[in-house]
Length: 259
Image (cartoon, rainbow, N blue to C red; front, side, top):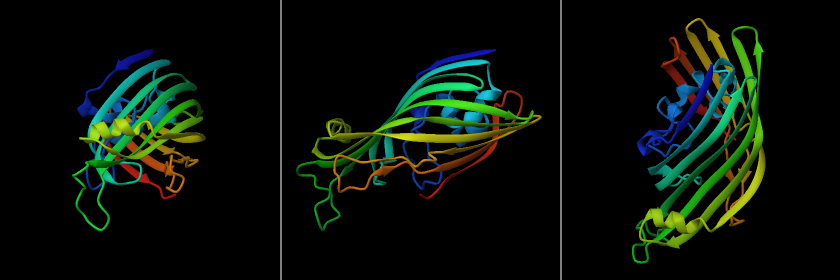
């Protein structure tokens, strides 16, 4: 069995609500198929995007899977510093799996522009239309190894290098999109090591998955040394699915762990 998929999802397919957020935020994850299932995909991941969503899932899919995927979105979201504003995001993915091995490259980008406020007031400075922009772009190159523990349980880990670029600047621009474009010139990049781990359990028509991401909590400094670095927090996600071919997900839970 072979799985080959090339996708460029519509903008609306990538803009989704992030878990445990009071307001909608910009999604930033690869895979149009996963975007429609939210975090429940951790129990369904059976193609090459499992390298990101749940490394253990690749052992339950096709003998060979190749996925090339690109998506972008615009809307309200939280930037790396946590300030709400208008932003943009895109996710690019190319990877293949030949269980028990997977190789993938993916790039995740998110940037948010927030109107600057004069000191001592809560009113945006509209005279010069200044906007503060902060963004994070991470490039991941990783290898995934999986191991079966009996007929029902698979454990796996993804190990790789992360190249992170933090952009931050205050610019004058007529709109948020223009401001984000201008701020891309002020980027500080650094390289870190990352580890993700996953478990997949299958019993009859039931399937459950667990993934722990960013176990090394990689952090990236920005162009301004006095600003706090952008840190990728540890995340634990659990998903459940039922049915032949795993088309239906019956429940999921996600938690961002403090660092």
